[in-house]
Amino acid sequence: MPCTQMKGVTGMPTRRRKESRTGIYHIIVRGINHEKIFQQQREKLYFKSIISNYLQKYKVEVYSYCIMSNHAHFIIRAELQILSLFMAAILAEYASYYNFKHHRNGHVFQNRFTSECIEDERYFWTCLRYIHLNPVKARMVKKPEKYKYSSMAEYMTGMLGLLHENAIELYEQKFSSTEEFTKFHTEQQIGIFKDISSEIELQYREIALLLAKNMFREYQLPLLMQVFEEKKIRKEYIQRLKEILNISIKKANELCTTTMNYVENE
Image (cartoon, rainbow, N blue to C red; front, side, top):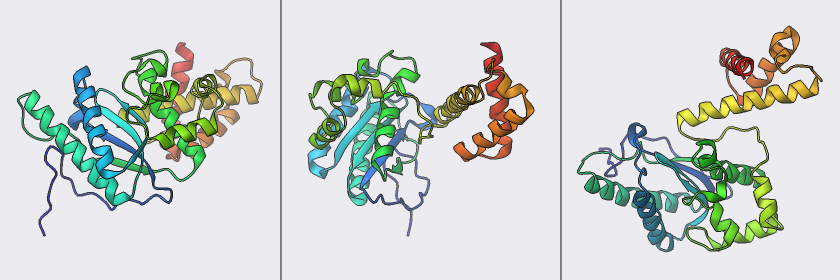
């Protein structure tokens, strides 16, 4: 049987998606060839309006979102088959709008979408925080609540746009105040989340630096550079990088060198 493609989306055959036990997924959509498909304010707003229009039809629940310039993140609760239909609908409609607006033809999104299962509460909240911090790490805003195109402001104000009411209920069970929620977003985390390749590399570097600082305190060293200069500690640092990030020893060594150079030049 010939492979069919969704209009506006590259059609590489995809592996069967893993089904989440909780029905909750971290979703990422990307512009083809890193294209800034949400560059303009009205493009972000139009994408939000498309999502809003299809929420009731497909009965999916949005728990977090952030629309960046060349990609977007979501935490969505839905049956896997319904999720696929929902994503196909919103991506196809946006691709049609984007192509017409920019007088172009062809694919707009890289593949369909990437999904990652969220199986427990701890990962749910750390993933949500990671999504909200995207524009901060990109230096678009200093505080996540200042970014207009994410769910952070909806949580802070209680004025629902794309968020489902169940998201607010979970938020109110977890946090006693907006101040506590804001503080939660300042906590450091060690963990890698699905994202575009450049962002994943940035996550590696951030975690490598955080680990070096942790070991600096753990060994009560006078200087941070000693983590890299003392052979025994450096060896342990590289091994921890390998285990925490689930990377090869070669990649861990490269990351160690990159982090050492960064610390040395600070």
